[in-house]
Structure formats: C-alpha cells, structure tokens
Image (cartoon, rainbow, N blue to C red; front, top):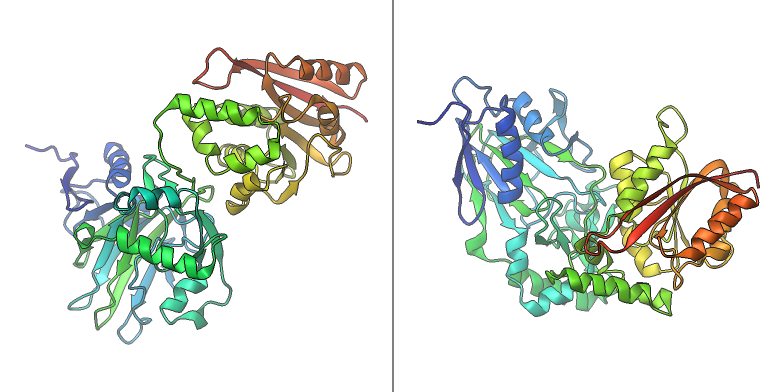
Length: 496
C-alpha cells in the first residue's frame, strides 16, 4: 500500500512522465519533481492528481509553487498580452470572442530569442474548446541523436541566430512586434543539469546560422529539421480542464495545434534563471587525457592569438572535462576580498584574458557581480562571451602592450589562466594591471607555482611601493593533474 506522501510516477512514451498523488507540502516530493523534470523533459499532472487532502494542483498557489522549483517567476513576454492574477499567474486566451488567433503551429523553444531563455513553464487548462488544441513536444536530446554523425559534427561548431520578429512573422503577427529581440546560441547546447547534448535550433525562431550565406543556412536548417523530427517521438497531450503540464524549456520543444474553434483559456507561470546562459556542446571524447593534451598544446602555441582562435569553440568543454577549477576559486577569492557591496556602487571589474567568460559566469551567478569589462587578444574567444552578454564592454587588446585604459579606472582587475611565458608576460602586464586599478583596489592573479618570473615581478612591485600583497593562496587548480599546483595573489593597488 502506498503512503499518502509517496509520489506516483508513470513513464510515458516516447518520453515524459505522469505524476499522481502529488503533495506540494512535501519537501521530498518537491525535490523529486525537480529531478523528474530534468530526467523526463515533460511532467503531466492530471486534474485529479493531487494527494488526498492536499491542495489541488490547478490552483494559482500550486502553479506558482511548482514554477518556483525551477527559477524565479517572470511575466515579461514582449508580445503576449496577459492579465496577472494571484501574484504572477498569466491568463492566456486564444480564439473565441475574446482571445487572440491561434498560432505557432511550429515547434519552438520558448523565448529562444533571449540570451537567457525561460527555464521552465507550468501550464494549466481552464476553459478548453470541444476538440483540438493539443500541446505537442519533441525531446531535444532525441532530436540530436537522430542526426547523422556528419551532421552532428558540423553543428558542434555552428551558432544560430534566433529572432522574435522572425517567429511572429511566421504566425502572421509581425505587426504586434514593436521591437525585435535577437540572440545567438550554439546549434547544440549542453543541458545545464544533466549535461546531455540538446539540439537548440527550432523552426519558429531560428532565422539563420552565423557566418553562413542565407541560402546555405536555409538548406542546412531544412536538412537538420527533417532528420531530427520523428513522428513516433512526439509526445502529445490532449487537455482536460484542470490538467497541469510542466516542461523543461531547454530539454524539449513545444507547439500547440491551431486546429480548434472556441475559447481556449490557459493559466501559465514561467520560471526564469536570469543568469542562465547556454553552453556549447562540441562532442564528448570521454577522455580527460585528450582535454589535458589540448590545454597543454594551446597554452604553448607561439602564435597565442591564432591558437586561441582555433580553440575558442572547444575551450570550455576541454577545461570542464579536465576539472579546471581556477576560475571558480579565483572569483570566489575576489568576491570575498571585495566584501559586502550591497549598499554601495557595484564595483567595476576588468577581466584580463577573459576568454569565453568563465570568470564572468561565476561572478554573476555566485556573487551578483555584473559590472564587468572583458579584455582578450582573441576575437573568437570573446565571441563566446559576447553572445552570452556577460560583459558591459569588450576590449580586443594585447596584454603584453600598455593597456588601452586610463589610470585608476577599476575597483578590481582579475587575470586567470593567462599568466605564462607564451601568453601574458610579467612585464609590462602586472604593472599595467596596478596602473589601471584605483588606489585601494584589488588585483587578483593566478599562476602556476613554478612561474618565478611572476613571483619576482610581484616582489618588485611591492618593493617600489605601488602594491602590497593582501594574501596568497596555494592549491591544485586542475583535478586531472594533481602534480601541478597553482598560486593566487591578491594585491592591493597603492598610490601611483
């Protein structure tokens, strides 16, 4: 006999799960629902799916509680007119005498035209037409797996343009879009929770591929959608009043069939992670050794700029595979020494050798620090940071030359992973970092312990009175190579 608190899970075909005996007062159940969504992509809770004595799932309070499991509640869609009830539940009406025309009979990921797409959606059927209006889903991982190895390999190095206007033009509602919103995402992304590859191209909002002629782009997209879509892999839900459906907006694509007459009123709540950014998937070698070989190879290139241009698309996957923890450690250290700035102006931070923006991701997600500028010699690396809108300013510059910034400009400068003989040399870089930092500001430097050139330069800067060492740290920065120890110096800029 099942306990009243036991969540009942029935697997659906071809994917998804139906939940019954749901009790949102149970912390155990709430945690399990989070896991189940990322595992299954779609969760369906029927109108009578609540546990005996528990709050019905289709109430506004329950819908909001479900959505908060996956992020912050948002209601800022650029086009859809909605009426707020009970905090942030949206009422969406289509057809009938009061609703907008039914539209979007193409598979899409909600708000893919934003740099941070919505994370999950909770949808509840309230008033339904007699027939039609089913919601259908495709699993983005299955779509990726359906592609040939040749197509997958090609898409790993492709980025796509997503457009709000492009999507509404296909629904003949272009006049409703006052201002276009566009974003660039990798064609294949890594699921942020499970790590599986997801096809992140959709027929509705994807309007082209970056650096590809339109005719070639259109032909390739057509080929991809034909190969990725299998009718026997589509999950379809026929609504009953009170049904609740939750979907992972990155893990699945959705559409509503525009095949009905009569009013269709739905309640929806959208969950958003404002710091969510899509991460490129470039194929899984499964070999830590391969990742380490790539890291050592590119760090030792004579033409540093060309090497990083070539490495840009695979960089994050290699360093993540190798367990490269230095950006996380260094940004935590910087935030700790900056202290509480909640009642002050947000500190301005320069990230030297910013690359694809790993430092910015950690500063933004973990510490709420977003007033960031990037500097790097590689436009390819900075492209990955730009598409995710991680910095307010991007400087393409060589750190081995005088920096193109005025003196005493920044509250902090951070340089992670760039200090090696083949990349950023100790002189003039370290003194330049001090020069552009405000008096009393911080300079955070990471380096391998064996790099005596940088230790000598730190000692010189302290001796001439332009900097002082606040603290230094020693640690293993790459899990795949425990023999290499790294060092982080926190310097304070003095009057210069």
